[in-house]
Image 1 (cartoon, rainbow, N blue to C red):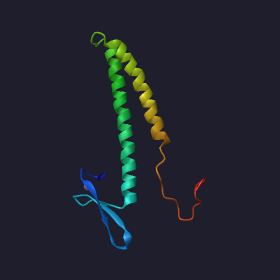
Image 2 (cartoon, rainbow, N blue to C red; image 1 turned 135 degrees about the vertical axis):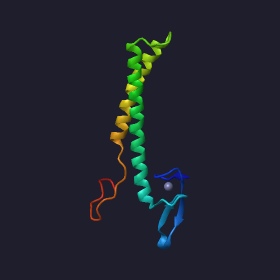
Image 3 (cartoon, rainbow, N blue to C red; image 1 turned 90 degrees about the horizontal axis):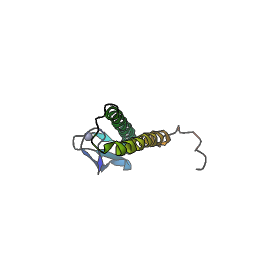
Image 4 (cartoon, helix red, strand yellow; image 1 turned 30 degrees about the vertical axis):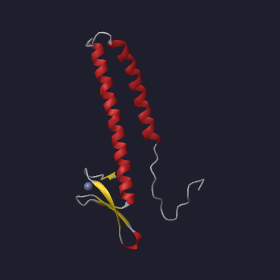
Length: 116
Ligand SMILES: [Zn+2]
């Protein structure tokens, strides 16, 4: 089941006249497949940025804990390892967002990209 981009409902597949497909949730949000696709791409990007924000919050808390020596005994080495890992994960997510190329519609007379 594909979740509705606008609520917690699930989208149901509905075949309309002339072979058109609609995706409808239980409260009535209705999408064409391409509109649902675009909404899901946007949701994915928002979620990825939320992960980066969460990682940065962990980074700030780790720095505060280190600076104010608010560490449980023996936690300092593993916190230092985790801070390195968090920094790498932030870079990975930023690269992931930067490198993501969602499918986009082209103007009707546009040339296809090389390789098609
Ligand atoms: Zn909905």
